[in-house]
Image 1 (cartoon, rainbow, N blue to C red):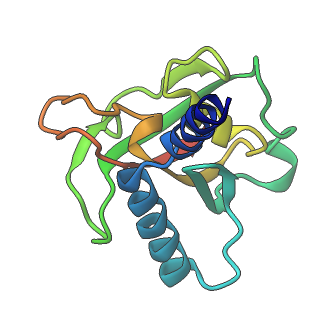
Image 2: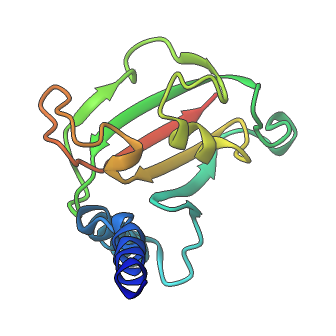
Length: 159
């Protein structure tokens, strides 16, 4: 009986530690540190575990912004995707800045779901920066020149 209890307790301990990922924990600390240094101690852009956003401004007049974005809304965006680092300037992994805006429906996973979720509540005309840990992006896979476990930053202009 005692042996079974010990096995069960060890199993529970292993399961409770399975969600802790030191790589993701480090990415979260680095992103939060960058956001606090860049946008101040009062930065409040936490969306969910490993997902953050900063709304930097709006280019449209107040009456042209519409309602906050929600799932199912069709929008067009200009997008720049970069590997996240504490350095302010990183080369783009992807951008459509010199092309037509990307058309998408919030929630259809044209982009990473975490990025689309972070856009909910934004307004048309918003200039948004979204930061995600690698588990919300390409994870442990290579993507082009990006190594595994790379957190990302997105700069998005919502049209």
